[in-house]
Length: 221
Image 1 (cartoon, rainbow, N blue to C red):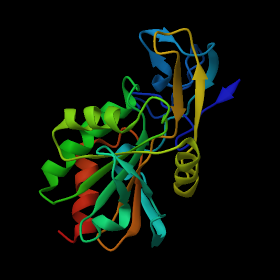
Image 2: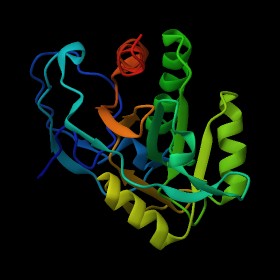
Image 3: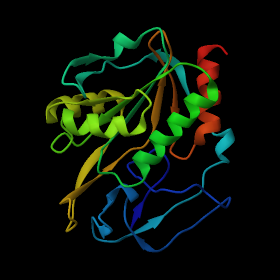
Image 4: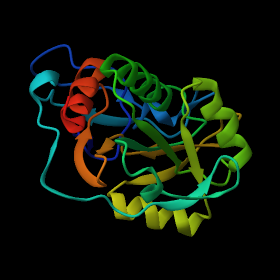
């Protein structure tokens, strides 16, 4: 039996609808493990306990600390350093372009949250699947959102180093789907303030309203 809890390696889409939910059923480890409608891995047994109500879950990084370094290649093939966006809050999110639901939902929530907050902010999307997500693929993907997102890629070793620094977990899931494999990965979004300090880790399903509130707080608005 595999037990998945919030903040662990998972990608279960959908927000809790009951105070305690015990789900004993054969499902995929991650909704990010679905591609082309086919299962990415063998079914497993999952027990999920619903966390506290979304609006009161603690997202603060305590104590506040400098954000880890992030030096990779952007969607235009140019070197990128997270330090280059100092002066503006930034969201950092690790995912991949073949993710069918968790990643696009998160990126759409971020776009809506920045608009709702009325505060300038950068969104940096880092692939954990560099074998398929080269600069060209990242450019096509982030351009779809028409929100000025930065997409980052690199070598396997560079991505692994960056993910480790940010506390991001991921692994490859072989499948019989058309895309060949899927990726299971942790799903937090990291909010970095204008001075380069890591301030919040926002859970999947937080929604645009909560994300916007955190952004306004960090921006002093």
